[in-house]
Length: 342
Image 1 (tube, rainbow, N blue to C red):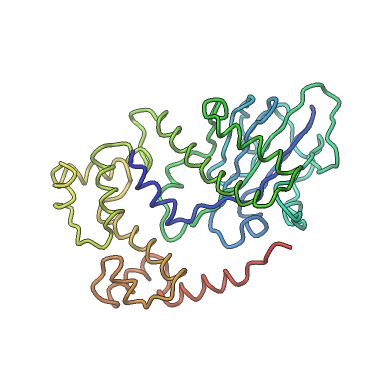
Image 2 (tube, rainbow, N blue to C red):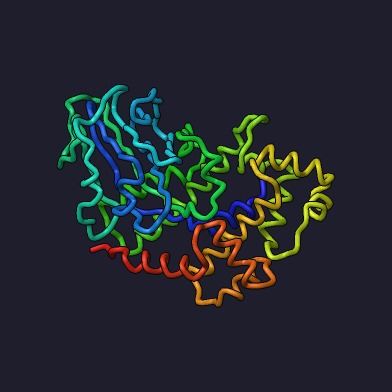
């Protein structure tokens, strides 16, 4: 797998971590998180997509998409809900919160993250969580945000639930990260929040690496394509030199495949032809440049391989549904509307 290509994608879709807290308690307890669309404005305003992760720092618990079969998590395990589904964390299978209140995520943020959160068996936040049982659990939780538009092939290649057994044990720094969240919530050291944000992003990369290593040979999708020598090489070329005048013949030569073989293999793994993927990747890069810089539209067009502004604007509108200028204005207005933490 090409680590550089993965890094390119994560930079382009603006991977970032936010809000850390830990749940501590003894059986019975339950915590539910609503669908990410309901709480994005509170957690990571301005992002297109958000997923939550949970790491078991002590004890054990159960995790499930609401209404589906739960899976057991042991100390050192980590679970992510990549598609942002409404999900349940609990001390026993089958427990559900009496009420799922998104309002808890919109409450005023503490002066510094992370913070401790206790849940009772009804799923209500309380000062101390003690269900009366002897089995105690410490669960570290956090969120990761991404751009989903105009192009993020990573999301479609990930499952709804991703469990990484023993991740904290197999990788010592992950265990240190889980402990750090708990420690930072008590000590509030300067810079602690920024450190944890970067570590959560590193954690996501580590999860992706482990996930790719455990994929069966018949797996398809963007991550599986990264693992394939020919498709991984093709992706790396397009990511490394997006403005180049690529043709499927040239890509095939570089990847060591005929035109037809590359097309067939690329579609098998990625789900779309190489040139269609390249066009979408260029639009993702262009959208980031429009949002984050003051470059003229023609300059952005040249950066991503278009020879004139008209052709670029037509392709951009087809990809995102509005002109480059309108996209830039709407994204910047949205960023201005993001409330700052109090």
